[in-house]
Length: 380
Ligand code: HEC
Image (cartoon, rainbow, N blue to C red; front, top):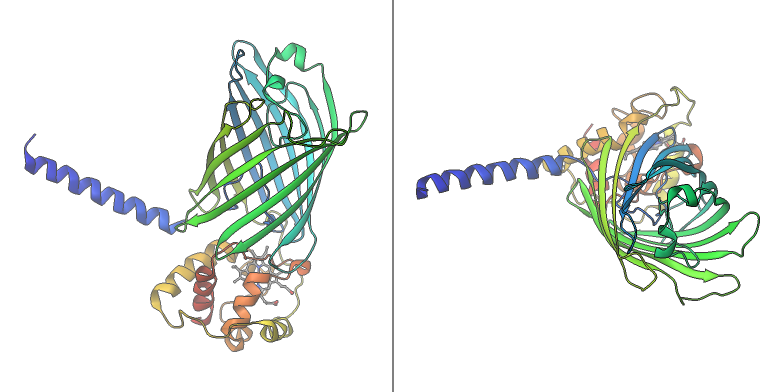
């Protein structure tokens, strides 16, 4: 190969990767990359998110399996998200089957954004022993339960109630979340306990990356770490378009009872505002007046900057316009109230939302992105 040709190829590659980087920056970070851990991020009211979560595992001395959960997540209120799961499983050289359903509800307990934000999670599940979705690890769950034929495992019926206390914080765009899990078979068996911990941060505008650690904590009768499974799983999510995101996470078992390796893949599609339009909303001024007295910072670091304005315009289209341009919420563009509000008050409203009245919190966006939105709103 001539060196001229090599240089040309190199230039094309550089151009392609710049174009790709530009594309990535133009997109946004979604709900984050966790598979097992929950943050306090709720589904936006009126939005429906449909996801498929897959996990592939290969227990020692047994066949490879693929567990799949189809999830339908709906924002009923800014403080109440409900979710339905339908699950199936396929085992190599065996077959595929339906393995049950779950119904989950998450309640955000404190309306405003705080250092630590508690969410209560309540779930009912009706699954069978062949279920391999592995959406949580509790008690002494371990690799041994992942063995055996579907025909045999499906005989075991599991009707369970599960509660989680979710504590979660955003700090400069980072999310840190701790979940404590208690699960009880409705008929028999003691309470089983588990935990999940996660941290993630944005990578540019389109992706988030982090790590999850989760495992069992034994039972009510025998609490502790003996014979429990634990996993460490780096994870990354990527927002491919405004409504579609992918995530992937390789998980490593770190105790004797754990499966050695689990590969998780997820894809989600979000339908914005499926619940009709034109609901009555309060007028802007008194809300912003209240925000004004609470705001700790009043000047916008990006004031009048063209680049920030453009980024803010994209963010507005993606995060705000579904409600604020449809009549479901007051219009913000060319609004005199936005014009007279201080930048600090707008920033405060975007961070805290007005959960009881249907305005979500955007605390998961890094500060810069919230100031970019303010810059855009103030330029209109
Ligand atoms: C799920 C729908 C929804 C989304 C998405 C949304 N908002 Fe709102 N927003 C509302 C509702 C509803 C209100 C009215 C709240 C009230 O009356 O207390 C509101 C109020 C506001 C207000 C104060 C005006 C008022 O009357 O209280 C501002 C400022 C605002 N939103 C900015 C934004 C920005 C900026 C975004 C995007 C980052 C955004 N909103 C995204 C629903 C939404």
